[in-house]
Image (cartoon, rainbow, N blue to C red; front, side, top):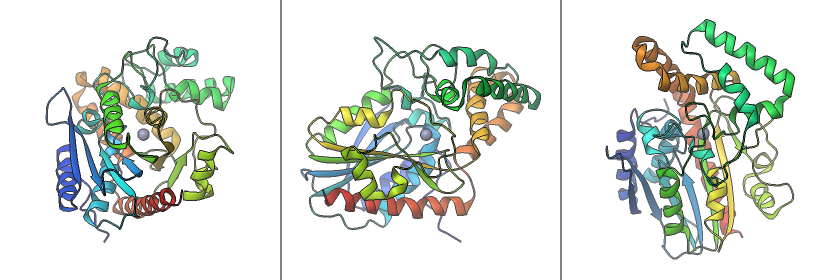
Length: 355
Ligand SMILES: [Zn+2]
């Protein structure tokens, strides 16, 4: 049996394991407390000489619940740390969205998708597609009949507008429906500000910086895929390909027929926060369920938040389904995440030190 001991059943447990492993590895620690209290933090652990010119950042929990596997990746690495190339530090950002991590949901305290929240709120982007989608995917009762009706409507919408427009409408991010899905918010979230503060504090001096933001829910079961936001032929695209191979830029394994035009994503904000550096960013997704099931989970999250309290029995069922969609219990899936991410980190360090 693979060793699953780096994985946890709660945010508190995950944080405890992470901090313990970080201290044992001799990492320098910094803590950013969430105003909700409850011992929620963005925690940062840095290994290596503070003033080194190169830094690799491994981030987890941008989408709360997806922090369970991301945290395990970080803890497992810290428990058996590899050697760092000279002049290179490795930083783990643990739980970008600790509030969502604690409650086993993707969103923040304001129902906000942190990975759509890095926009200019003086002029938030419009998403007219979502305006049309919203009333058709928000039933008061979340049962097999209402779910089937929702998918019938979505199928018709997709046929009408095409895959790309469908993806952008559904999950590209929207700023007009605070009780909707993939809501980008009306203001910068605490997690947004804390992430940028930590980024500047720990990477603000470095000349070459890379960020790998760990997620789950896109891609074939148990495999990792790179969701690329780099433009082909640019220096960053070349670095991604050189460091992590063709799959880092060719969309291999992405289970969406067409990716949305995403707004306000964290990796772009990371780059913007470090004007002094050459920055390389990657979003690594570990696949769990087929796309339709992940869409179902997104809509279920919204139902749980808005209507769930009135149907406690159904809520418990839907919540269990939701957790499994982002954090599979299967020990082989978990072992695969650790194995693949260890290689992702090793290649990131090697690539960074070769620049
Ligand atoms: Zn995610």
